[in-house]
Image (cartoon, rainbow, N blue to C red):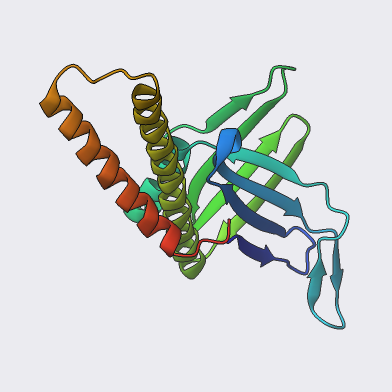
Length: 193
């Protein structure tokens, strides 16, 4: 489940924010795409984002938590986030309060900059969506831990190896059972991804 916020304006300086996440595999993370506004129709009072050169940024759970902290405490980032690619391309992400009400998210990637203002209700949506995304990433980690525990116990039993201490073996089985129950409860939520 993603989050989309479109903020066009008559000055043609608006932006769109598209947020998504991946909770499985090597590409776990939270992704934000910012797209600059490319047009405005006076007749319909609608903006266009078609063909806007988007900037995509991947955030770690720790970086996402920084956004949640800022929103919950109504405090801007003390310092911008910096990302640097292997090719030397840099991205600066800032999240500051503007006019005591709005949060301004700006992303500056080498030669391009896109920013979007979040109203109070959009701040709530963004904060809650980030928490939702983080909970699914945590569930993904749990599922991986369950799989590793099962694989470990299976390899020990197939090789005829015994876990040296009977109480340890019982504890391992209890832990594997608990983890499996937790994983099943996650699967029962019928998560589509």
